[in-house]
Length: 561
Image 1 (spheres, rainbow, N blue to C red):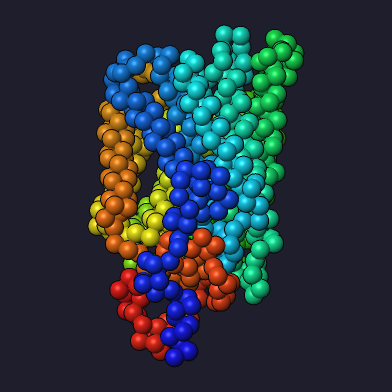
Image 2 (spheres, one colour; image 1 turned 90 degrees about the vertical axis):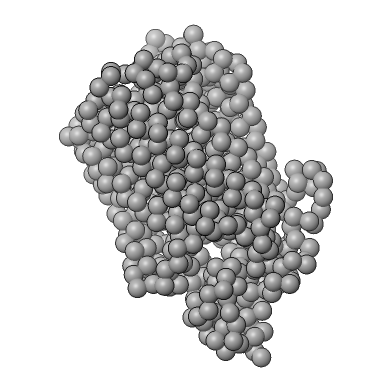
């Protein structure tokens, strides 16, 4: 009897999940959403905005790839091409990759993994969403005022010269505003983890996703103000010619690069650390094993956050900085790979002899391993002074960046979205079609970007709207891959949309997970928990096994231990 009661506490019944007053039905009308302080509703609004940003950035990417089908350009004019690749980069990085996992999935999941009812500062959370939305709208307005052709890094002097129009000023303003959204989110997450852990949950009792979000918050709070200052100075330089970055007024354009990359390389870990947190959760749950080397993975997140501030100069090996500076940055670039390698080896050790189940989230995580592995190994070439000079500003860099940032973050984002989808929506999706979509996404990604390593090694420069005919086969192969990748993404969107319309009611814990967000109904009640659920440890599957065996209980997904 005790065991059965314990099971009900950990995993509410199917009947309870379908009848409760959940966060989706708690209040109706658009005002109840846009003025909501509920972290779940804010997370859903973030998710919708971020998915729209992904769609917009993806459309820009398809235009770029179709244009590059022919050496002379097959679709748009050269100036239009420059606008498309600039906005593709800006939208994907500032509106999808950086905020995607923390702002959407982190917002929804973090309080529930702590057994809390909300974040520490709900109003600050809503303000951060408003700021993100304003920045996103400004990026869209850039399209209507003539576009932006500077590249997403906005390097002066080109970006700040007199012929650049209103688009540059709007882009700088949008980046400044979105940066403040990121700062507020990171501050809120750190405060929540510090102050709202329940009794019995120490630092090393937290799910690793929370460690990843906490480390991400450190970077957001410390590094993002530097970006804000940089773009503000760029705005003032463009308006008043103060002589900060523009050489004709006595400024130094390389100074902009130092400021920009001092933020932007730590921002790489704002992108990848939450992705790694998702991988830790999914690997453990779908291997049915406690995470191997928990403390090493937790501390490696903090190590990445700290060391990540010291490697920005590897983006500037060709900028004219001293050889000793280059040597130091090269060493630190190799050093920062150590904490990432610790995570990968511990994930593989977790899977070793595990009862692995290839549900859709796990399929995406296996894709993450492949993509992150290729991206990490090719990063060795770019961290080495001897090869970086030759490969700098070629398609080799484009491919490396997309494997590490876009591919790895995208697959982890999709893994987390599918993992928490039953909790978010209360609906199950079609596993067979979702797995097919996942395979299409990963196959398409490899076909798109592997040829770009080869074209980069052969000297194909990045950002060019036209190219020599010798590169035509590799560019056409990349374009075919982009179409396959887009097909997988649209199929996945269709699968999730159909699940909302016709999906089966999700049980409280469809995966048999042990972390606290699965101790709520699906979808969760308005306040998450009536009382703090019992703390059993995020990867303590032994408790679930013992309870289910005593009570004769079969897991909600039909998998009988």
